[in-house]
Every structure is written in structure tokens, then in C-alpha cells.
Length: 88
View (cartoon, rainbow, N blue to C red):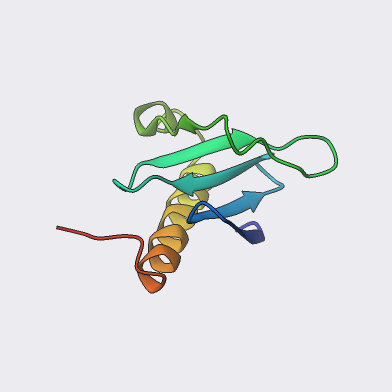
């Protein structure tokens, strides 16, 4: 598993970065996993998120699928701890 960096912003957003994948991940209020590419130097564009396509992930290596699942679970845990994630 890659090391992830936790970033929080003033817009109630938890962001985890993955240098191995070259992108950052977050979740919206409905639990949709989103990503954005990391810029050179490690910065990210916080206004340009795309939904992770889980169906397309099926064609990726198993290690990448596991890492995405791990990141998703980390985000859920962090967002629950902050009161920003609710499961029905």
C-alpha cells in the first residue's frame, strides 16, 4: 500500500493523496469517491474532481484495485470521525 497524506480544507473536505497513483482522492457528501491529478511539486486542483469509475477499475491490476479500496475505506473512516459521512 502506498503512503497517503491527509489534507483538510475549509470546505469540509478530506483529501488523501497517493504519490504512487499521482492523484488525490476525496468523497462527496453522498459517498462518491472522486479523484484529481496531482500537479508537479505535489499540489492539487481542488475544483476539478472526477468520479472514480469502479467498472473501469476491474481492468486494472489487483494491487491498484486494493489500493483504491483502501483509500476509500480510509476516507469513510475519517469522514465518519468528523461527522461528515452518514450511511443509511
